[in-house]
Image (cartoon, rainbow, N blue to C red; front, side, top):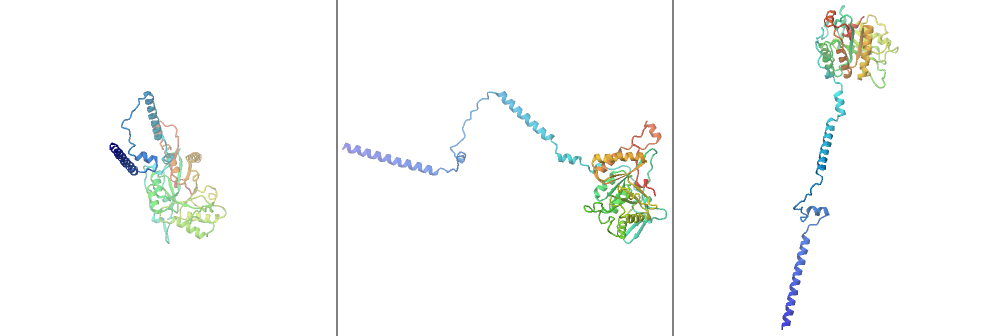
Length: 390
């Protein structure tokens, strides 16, 4: 009997252990199935809730605190040096823009007065179709009537400056008219916009006004002087129409400035006839061709003169200063000099600075009062008409 009871106890114990084992296995399997599946070790480290940061962090003492302080100071010094270098670094583009010549630097010239005729004198205008052409009225000629006489003290050499190809850029033309002394003369391009208004503005600022006489381009395969230039391939009537169209815009124009181009035996007859038309209309001619051919042409009673210095190729500071030094030598030798320039900002600014270097025109008494014994730069600006003779 006792043996049976012991056997039953053993069976019950084994059953309980089996049931407990089954429950434990089932719980473990359920836990495993509920765990998230990670694609990599990194995701498991990031998202596993078991990977918690430590509750306490132990920081060991620095065995060399001075070295650490020195390192921090060195890093700070290096950072300051880098910042300083960045601040001192010059942007090449900004530096170039800062040094780029701009006509606003001219400012406003002082003591400028309008010319006697800002608009054309009605007695010196001939209407011909749609054109308003200059003409002679008795002894009164446009080149004299539209000019301005300037007195020059003894021992001073006269300097005339003409800006040709003027008015194409209207904004720049206005800055030049405002900023240059009123003795400087302007020769307008026939392609300038609103020529009449620009001529009126320039003359209100005291500047004599002329028109460009465009010769055929020497490099006609690459560049063209345009539809109002003289041509080798058209008739005299066509070239005459171009000439009259250039001067017939009902504005006060005193003459023409001949530009560089073809002037030789191939067109000498037409050029002579066209320049004779200028003489008959009482206009002057300034030869700025850079050669002697036109200057050697015989045109009776034409008011004319030849330019001595042309600023039209090298507009660098060194190049312009070299030409102005040449102009000074010519003025001292001949008693006068005529300079013709393109309206490039670098050339205009260099000329304006040159004008400012001229010695003031003082009388003998004034020089004595100021203890001046020598005139350093005895040059005086005059309008173009002051140097022209018939």
